[in-house]
Length: 222
Image 1 (tube, rainbow, N blue to C red):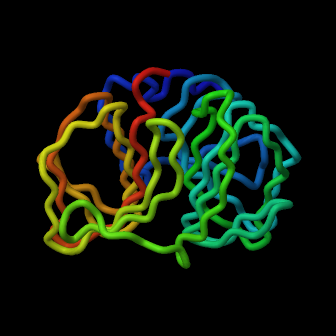
Image 2 (tube, rainbow, N blue to C red):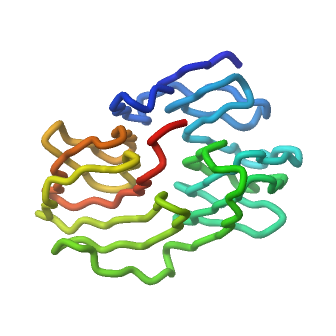
């Protein structure tokens, strides 16, 4: 695997429709991935959409700099349990598992982004978790994880919702899960991945409503 430097410059804004990317092979013949960003070889800091075929599994392996997973479709499993659509998993540095998918699944995955001293491990079933009002009318928020200045959450936008212009210290990363998310730079239907650099600014809105997975505060220096 030689995808060194794929969209790896965090100072650059990056917008990708993941649904248009080809599926590429992985170390498991039954697991394929769509590469969004990658810095390194087979062991890399990476962001990907990953698809497990029915019955696919990986041997036990360790995540030296952590792993985050959001289950998009199907059921993802390991020794700790079974995780259906909408599950968010955070495995900190030093953890290990042997994942599999009895009936197949599709995941959004981030690898090797965490500080070596990070110890927060969690599993959230977002289908049954408690949402909270956002800071603007029309927004509801489900916090998923906070470590220092890094925040991960689901945010639901009601149709016609607009947010004031704002700047992101430490950058922002968005995965559009449902509907269409927009800002002054364009419209982003479901499947889009948007990475905005440290201190970038925009004025987001959604005409018809959307659901997004958002990470902030993690892009101010690899």
